[in-house]
Image 1 (cartoon, rainbow, N blue to C red):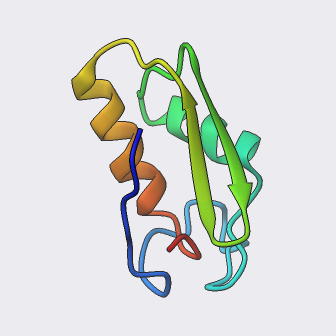
Image 2: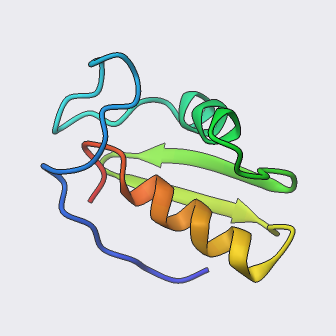
Length: 79
């Protein structure tokens, strides 16, 4: 999908304050939260590798893909 960079110390702590600047939550937790806010995660998997989120699969549309990437980058601790 490509490489996107985000500011690690900013972003949403969607997870009840559990996310620290150096520790993003598990990929399954992030995916579940994205589904809660209305993103269509069909065909997409997320993996956390250090301070990176790896987005794998095929999104339902290019627009949804971009929304998923931006939402993933808006998680506190993701660079």
